[in-house]
Length: 215
Image: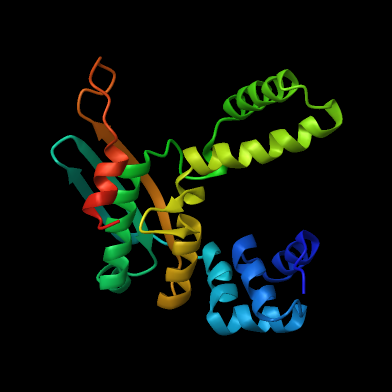
């Protein structure tokens, strides 16, 4: 059975779960909405979404240094100190630090991108589409699609996980919340690059980091 966007949207509104998880659930359940909702509950994903409103003030601050040239500091919060000592949680924090080093996100989420930056990017993409000779009636849809690519590049939660490109960082986070049973939030990160802002030889640091991670 073909899974349509409207079906995914309906399940998302019903469960509060992310689009990719909803699509997967519908695919697994042959488009049956009720079975898909149960599937998400059984996997713990729907409950994970509900946990997102709970206060998380414990956690870890960790760092990652790549060859003395890139440095990252991240803060990831959990509800309890007990979870902060969990090996899977600690590995998640390390993975996030390495993700920031490799993919160099500018923002945590879409909500963090300044409005003026979004409008500026949309205007550029609109002009690009018009310059390509695209009809005005489809330009808006094209801009929306290309904005999604923009967010995937600059927002940490929208990026493909460098260790498993089939999932986003947001999905990785949701899966961990479902497994551990506590609200977990990536609060903030800072990335430093040696000689940043100075004229220097270009290198593919993302590829370097990916190799170190065994990719």
